[in-house]
Length: 395
Image (cartoon, rainbow, N blue to C red; front, side):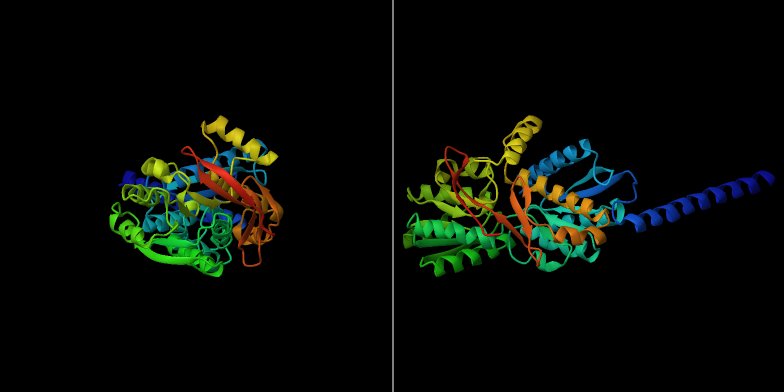
């Protein structure tokens, strides 16, 4: 009886001690520092991206850029005297899984910020969650419409489609002389639907003519019907607003049906090696826009390119650069505000002006939208995106 009673008291004491430690200490730290304060010596930043799904090339490259930035910051003493820790999860290009990951970042990992998915669709599916929890989410790539309107904790550090799209159409019409256009939209992609509207408005305003509009589903592989319809209308150029997989297959089908000289023009969604791996010679001459090019770099960008090559043995791309800049812009705002609490540093973040990043100079407007300069027009030559033209943007 004595032994049983003492065992009961011992177990009760252990449970009470664990409960006090788990509730009291954790709540105090979170209150003082907001997200990321559960570990006193680190500032946690979540990586939200696709590492194994259809857009894995974007996610992996964004993460590599973030790792480079974190390594540099930590070697220089970290942020607010603390080391930067990246919390990694793979949503596999699944919006529901991405939403679950954001909930975990906020409620379990206690991140101070999230460097968000590079795609518009996943960003729009997850940003309402982080915004509602008052945790900063910055997409390192979402270029489409309706992103920052979600709320004051939602940012992006990418060249907007509303800037890059018209600049590309202006080049297409006024320098290349293409005025008869076939416009193709991936109707199940937020990014593609939004960009098609931007392209359509720009083509009309600049005196072009859309001779045919076609649609497809992201994930389709047979585009013989769409290309047959397009061929019958004899356009001078194909403008496609979607991603690289369907873009490469579309151009391969165009060549198969005898459209020997037509080229594709699109947004940065085309920019992945998969574009020419699937399209082969058919995608040579294709043009797209973005906010980064390794050619004609600034001094800071040249160093970044060299460091990426040394660390990852590859040439830096747009998503490496935007992931790198996103993390550094967030950490600079923390230093300015003197806090890793997103409720505190969000104001400093919103006031970022002419930040000299490796992906261009970034300024956030009053509505949180970024203005970036210049617009880089790139063209596929010998299975590589090469610089065609730099178009300055007024800040």
